[in-house]
Image (cartoon, rainbow, N blue to C red; front, side, top):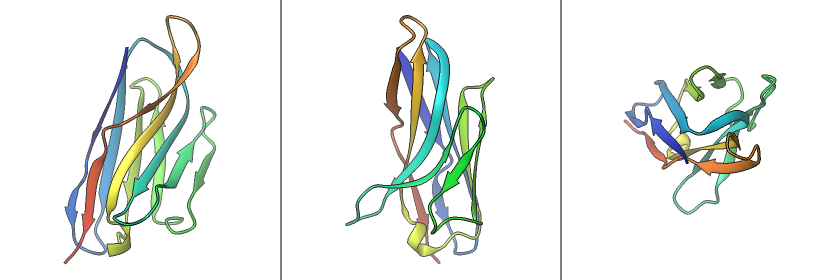
Length: 121
């Protein structure tokens, strides 16, 4: 009943920028926390950034000052602006949304399909 569509990944040179988007659609009453995770080859999934419904943000130490998470509740969309990208940012990035369903007002966890970000010269 809820679908997430990620976009914005790609290949970028070190020092470059990318903007990821994750749009939710379907039977949505409200979205609480919105998070971005990533998984690099051979590494465990890690939380990159998160934003609450009140707009409070948190970041992994490794991306603080370079990445910015934001949300547009009118569009049910979360963004991740990534600047000053480094090769170690290479990973598959996933959005994770806590969606309160319109049909029963219960919160469910939804994941995007993942988008590849490759930072290389």
